[in-house]
Length: 387
Ligand code: PLP
Image (tube, rainbow, N blue to C red):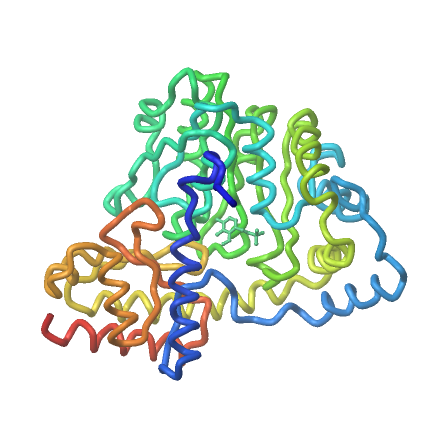
């Protein structure tokens, strides 16, 4: 009979997926559901990108691609980032870059420091690779960002990585140049620690964004930058992400990938070339739409009793504190708050607990204005009812 390995014993289906699936099954039963729970742009993939994939398939680019990515896409990413081809790996989504990196570097008991709130998959991927996530809670008052002092205190001789995400899912927080320099100062005192910076939302910044690679190039021999086309180019289903790092690190990630998936889809890589090298005006147009949605969501949330919502600097999420609203509703946890909201109002949001910081919830504003308004109306109604 089937028995789960120790490696995955504590692994559960992501809370985000659970909520989204519960919402989908309620909808299938005929309930009227508004889901603001998924981190996926509602925009279509740009038509010229779809056309490039079509042409690649017709041209017979349907064979196994090179494990680390097609030369065309790797060279394009390399030239856009001022590195060489050997510094770039293309994977099946940014998620696979993260998984490759952890599998390639962690031995049992190795530690990975991650500020919370973090993207849910970080802790699960680390655990899957046999490592121990070391979670450093970073409150709303601290701007959801880790300070140099707290980073320093979290590092031990077993620390292999610090995992940063800027702009952040779920908070939208961005590390400024000065903050990145200050964190790098700590890392310089701990030469055994590598740094992974997930910059997948870099194009979705409402304020100035700086890549850690530009700000502290002197750390590039132990830095992995993660990025991809999913969010900026509305290409979540194409599954293309990449990592930029030192050649020995990239070769190790490639060794893992070669035994798990081989190279990422050749058709999708051709599409990614078109996305990265084609017209970029769409990014600014879509960012303006997202900014309007952000402003709508933040102002309406802050007008609700018991909710405090900071303005996110990037990405397409808000992560308000709802402890006041929880108390008013007599609900002890943010998970119960989200369950009750879904069951009574048909609104799907994700509890902060899923990101390692309870007392909050995450609302994605990558949805149409009408959907957002409908969701916010439901939340307002929920709060206006007695417990
Ligand atoms: N990194 C972060 C912070 C994300 O929020 C996500 C998707 O939600 C990913 C990585 C995964 O990206 P991909 O679709 O390229 O696997």
